[in-house]
Amino acid sequence: MFERPLAIAAVAAIGLQSFEKPQHIALPLAISLLTLFNYWFTVNRLQSAARIVAYINLVLEPAAKLPWVGWETSLRCYRQWLRFRTKRQARDYVDANLELTAAPDALMYYPPVYYFHAALMSLAGALAAAQLIEATTIWAVMFSIATAVLCVWSVQYFVQWRPDRLRTAIERNRVIWQAVLSEHVGDAGKATTNASVDSICGNSD
Image 1 (cartoon, rainbow, N blue to C red):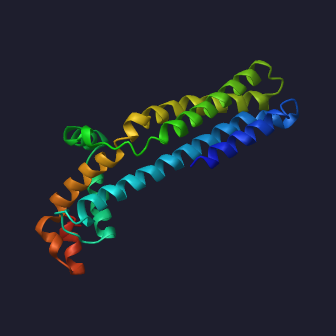
Image 2: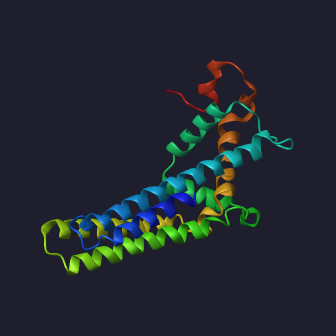
Image 3: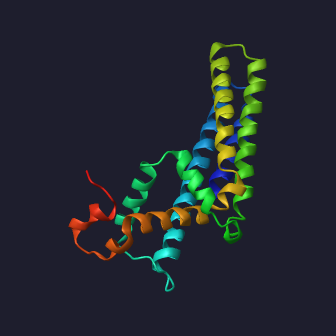
C-alpha cells in the first residue's frame, strides 16, 4: 500500500530531472493518472476488506446469530440490496443505523496514504500549471489542460473517501450486511438447496 505511491513519487523525481527535454510534457499527466488509479485501487481494496471483516463479524464468529448460507450467495444478496436502492437511500439508511462509537482505529495508516496521494496530485497540478504558462506547442497545452481537468475531477473522489469516512467502512458494511441477511435471508437462510437461492435473495426474475 505504501510501495506503489512511493514508486510513483520516484517516477516523478526521475521525470523532473528531464523537465527541460521534449518528453517532459507528458510528465504531469502521467503522474496524475498513475496517482488517481492507484488511489482508486487502494480504496477499492480497503472497501473489500471492510466488507469481508463485517461479514465475518456477523456470520462466522462464535457469537454471531445470523445464518450462514455461503459467501457467494450472501455477496449476491448484498449486490441486489444495493441495486434496488438509490445511493441516497442506501446512504441514508446506513447513516441512520451507524454506530460511530464502534468504529475502529484500524485504518490509522490510511491518512498518510491519503495525504501522500493528495500531495502527488497537487504536484501534478502544479507542474501542469507551470507547463501551461510556458507552453510553446499545442501538445504541451493539451497535456496540461488534461492534467488540470483530471486534478479537478479527483477532488470529488478525495472528498468522498476522506479518512474520517473510510474509518467507518467496517461499521457501514456491518449495517448493510445486517439489513441484507435479515431481510433477504432470515429463516430462509437455513435452506440448503440450490433452488432456494433466488428466494433467499428475494429474486423473482
